[in-house]
Amino acid sequence: MLIFCVDGLTGIKEAINAAYPKAEVQRCIIHQLRNSFKYVSFKDIKAFSNDFKEVYRAINEEVALEKFCELKSKWGKEYPYAIRSWENNWDVISPFFKFPEEIRRIIYTTNIIEGLHRQFRKVTKTKTMFPSDSSLEKMLYLASMNVVKKWTQRYKDWDRVLSQLMIQYPGRLENYI
Image 1: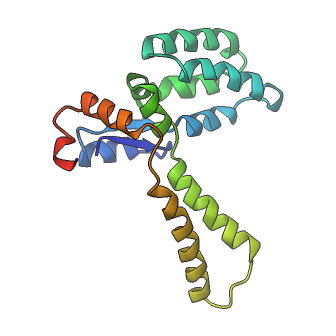
Image 2: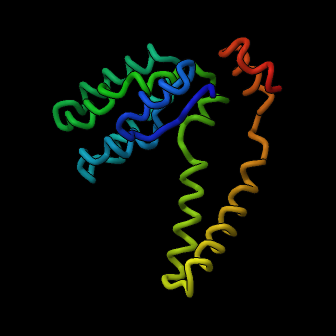
């Protein structure tokens, strides 16, 4: 395992590091933003979110920190807990910045898992009663099969992604290719 893109579950980084000491643990940027939004007034969320784009779209960690400092000076007094959330989690946000754009697109979010959950909710929401547990299991199985089809699709620019991963992690991929 090279990279884990995770949500903010307490202790997940430590658990991953115990099992996979060489793996990168990357906080899902979308989850981090949503966590910040809990502390921001609805009227400011759009502007706050747009300002954060400057941070997570930065070319490298140094620029990201500069943009974060600008953002902190703008929003820090009004929304200190939203800012503190990023400060407290910077160690699991910052690995993102050492990767090129092709890899960032893949680790930006935990979308594969969220997509599966979204399909499960869609199936169970439209039908509130199931005649048996078995019928529910069959519906969830069929929904998962539809999602799994997408998992085998090739990522855009996969050849570039693979070459960048081989540069980032020398000697760790060759046996699997």
